[in-house]
Image (tube, rainbow, N blue to C red; front, side, top):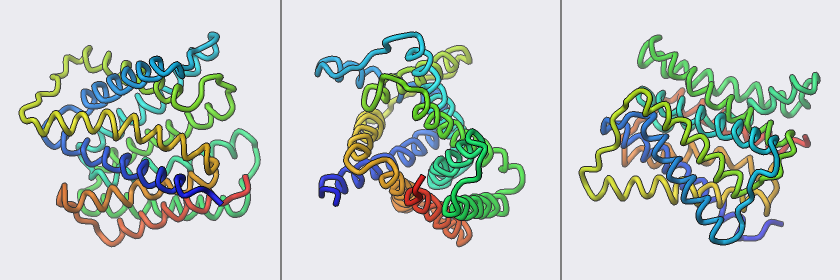
Length: 292
């Protein structure tokens, strides 16, 4: 039986991750360009995480070219593309919708591994895949019915980000990287953030204008608790409870995002969106209980 600390870590991690979607939506609503937000958030978070681990003597560094290439791949897919596409889509979709579509990642992982292994997943995973795809269809269908077919591209963009996160996850599991845990997260945040920063500078996008003290506090929250600490807690929970069981709790993130969005963003949800969210959560939970 997992220790009580494990469940507190899961609760803290998923709550902090959920808050990141809501706070990011606040900044985007205030006119901050999504790519600038991604670049500033993750470049700073990566630098702080690397510096903190270095001071503690716990920083793992690339040992060979394969490690360098691996960190570049993970950083590009898991931070640069995932959050770049997700935040651009968030200009047009709600924070809860982006959270739900992003958290389809375990569904994509199952599909990618099935293609790589040239074998159908176990029955439980096939059922979970079907339920998850139904959930995504309900979320997208409800959103398109409300906003029009022109918004379909933003749903697709968010799903591209989720597929890239899944690809990074599969790569991390199969590539034999020597960098793991907190260090891998720190490096990949820095790499992805720096890549998006280069794009933002090349496009000459305006920076973040902090008008109020609350703006600064929200940004600090986004960088430290909602980025560094949330993933740190998550990696610690993974070590305590194992990847299979722990991944099932990912569905808490869109749930918490939706709950926080109601008072903070005045969000409302159509019945089909709620049903789709439940289906995606059920699919993730089923996959976490699968034997493979």
